[in-house]
Length: 150
Figure (tube, rainbow, N blue to C red):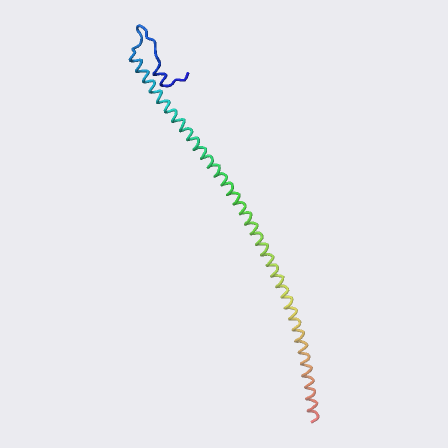
């Protein structure tokens, strides 16, 4: 049976010859009805507060879920950036090694070219010296021949 304050206030009791004091019963009914009204009002407030707190809790759970997703996304972005920078680092190193090998190869070619050029110059010097020596000998012979005729 559901009891509301109005039910308590309107409740009538049968009166017997030596029954309870009517004033005391009416005062008690009024006190019980007042307490019940307060409890019903408090119950409504508490139910309203529960609904409000549930809504607030849902908001916080949504925020928590969003934060978790954000952290997961941030971790994935960090991991992606790490992988990307590692690839970029590896690519830079590979390009640098390739460039270094190209420079070394070019330097070796230049050394070979310089060595070849030096050898050619040495041969030309030797030829020039022999030709000069022959020319000088030839001129010396001519001079000797001219001095001998005089």
